[in-house]
Image (cartoon, rainbow over the protein chains, first blue to last red):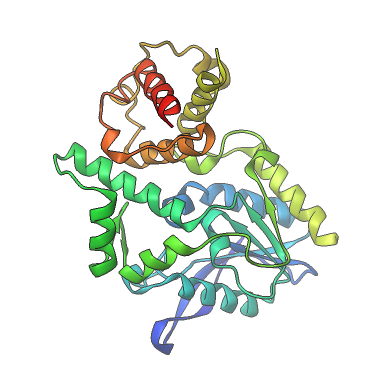
Length: 226
Length: 86
């Protein structure tokens, strides 16, 4: 496992250097991982890397890039839109010469074009957004402030909103709410039920599950040869 | 144990990282929100979204207060009421 960097395009034509975690031995198959987004990205981080370890063991290169504004990125998330993530993944796919893509959860909403691959546990952007809005409403209520979905969205679309510790612009909120999985040809959905066990992104405390990592890596390892 | 009861226990097991036999031991009086510090606002929000998906109900944020999550029994009663009206 090696940390690498890749040139990531930014809004307005600038570029940044973003981190990527790689298992790179210049092998035939090279899988780009499109990570889960926001809080789910943290909850699934260890699972993601465990899947990568297994792919490496199966003789498959893989790379997990940071998206601008998330994980170790120093970019201001409030200036980022989903389209920027798509461009970042396209840049990472080019830079690391990916042959396939494996997206997890919300990562499959911003797939780079052209690459075929898989989307684990697809989710609508609206569903991710609703869960984060709810978390804010619940936290606010505990603090004695009443907020509603409608008032938060109105406020957010006009001037941006902080949800679950993430600063999201109005444009991010608008685009995220409209993104749906399953639009891209060549991408096979892998429903969570195929892996067995409880979904790790739901865990209140981040956890791991070896059997699930085994199962997902096995599907990919067989799939790249198909 | 009917389907709703079973599904709700499975969702809680998924959120709390519990084994099936642990959630099978939940009674109506088993404490949830106040007794389980790991059940923070993000976890509760994920739980609600999952309940909507798996139990085919729609939950309005206005209906969610501490009482609903006080015990397993109160959460199950809330879910059944939503299914009856939904």
